[in-house]
Length: 151
Image 1 (cartoon, rainbow, N blue to C red):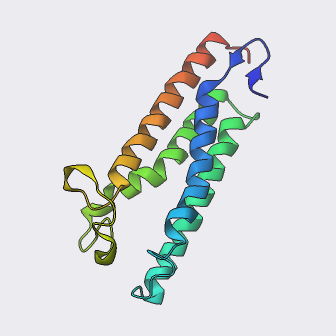
Image 2: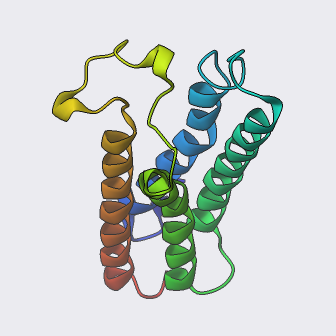
Image 3: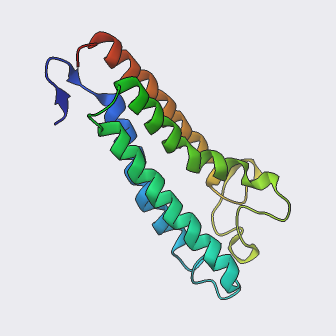
């Protein structure tokens, strides 16, 4: 399971798997909470979009795992699909602040956690870390594929 016959440990595949599972579970931990879904200040329509984001993150994470382990099709195509799917949640979160009237945190939660660079939320650090993991996973898996073309 951890290795392909004759090919050794596939760290890129496993990094994508961990990233996918963290995305699928992490959005529930972060957003199905008092700061989001159970925030009395949020109107129902905002909570609707929060639920949409939670479910989208769950599906993107699970699709990442599916394509990372998919046996059918071409390995490089499956890797590209897993990589792109894995990055979508984090890219959209990283760029959401470009739209008007958005913020990293609601006012009542700003200052509850100390963050560097004057940031009011942890999202930029998480986005950068997860996108870096995805990029490293892609490079490692492509190297594995180059060394094991028959697998």
